[in-house]
Image 1 (spheres, one colour):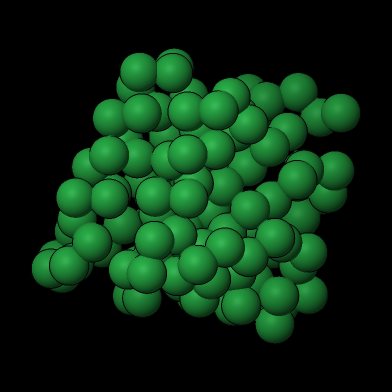
Image 2 (image 1 turned 90 degrees about the vertical axis):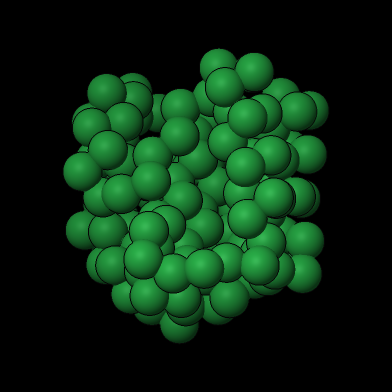
Length: 121
């Protein structure tokens, strides 16, 4: 499983908690994260490959991986209450997931359903 994880600032703790709750299920996954989300995950003891932070191009880097066929799942815990200057990159990522038929979850409930349906390898 090739998994990308992204979380807005107000959702980073929720993302890390979700990943820790599912540590066994994602144990063999190759996890890519935007920079700040990845730093939080590393501090919690998870192994991730960090890219740039979202506003600095990390969302676009993950979109590139989607376009290249190098991602299987995307979890982007979004903060629907906040304004985000990198919204065009977020929209591009979501669009590319639709174009390439990549499952995309924006909250823990959706992410859990996707993980539960994914075969453990």
